[in-house]
Length: 307
Image (cartoon, rainbow, N blue to C red; front, side, top):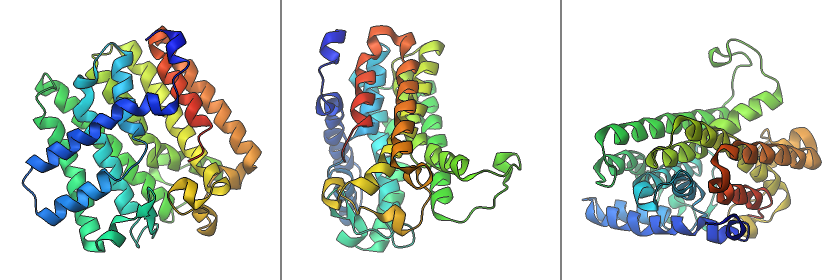
């Protein structure tokens, strides 16, 4: 797509290819033997709205390195499964204890806690099965590499949930025994809890498109920057947006006394950090030339999103 066309795309148009993932997931679940109530719970959680950012990144990053959406559809569906499983578990009473997700009752409110836990467990493992069984991934070696990428990101995301919800010692082995200040702790949480899956989305898309080392590294840096930026914007929206706008309960971070960018830097400081990380993401795309313009446009939209 020419640069002039890319520059006019709105956010919905950039994310639109990821809507194909819904049909892919529906077909996969319909064809996979499962208890009917478990399938219904997964469908409720997976297909109940959402921006589809992570699958869109898989598809658009594959496109940016010369691949097709078809080549990346299985990893795009898998990352949405992992993301949705994380939301289902994050909403449970033992975690964030939330009643609303994507504008609807959370899964444990729609069904019950046991089913929400089991549906999350199932989506977690089905994501890897989906990749390994999809014939559009040409070689077992590529499938294994994608599974490895997703597994690492999933475990990093779980670590981020631990950093976010459970007390941590000021000195820890993963920090080489160093004491982290509040901002460093917050960045660590965001890079794991939200950033890990976004980074993996970009890398898996690049891998599906047979990216060379330079372009893979470029999209890795882009994914790291956009992952951090996305969560900083979330922090700001938790303070400035309404529950109706967000589709989830607003103001929960402050009520739970969580570390956030507005809490540490103020709203102006958080917005300045969004601009800084946005610039990092755009700069990372330079090796892609014109092929990176849609991804650059995506960053612009996400930096100013309202929900």
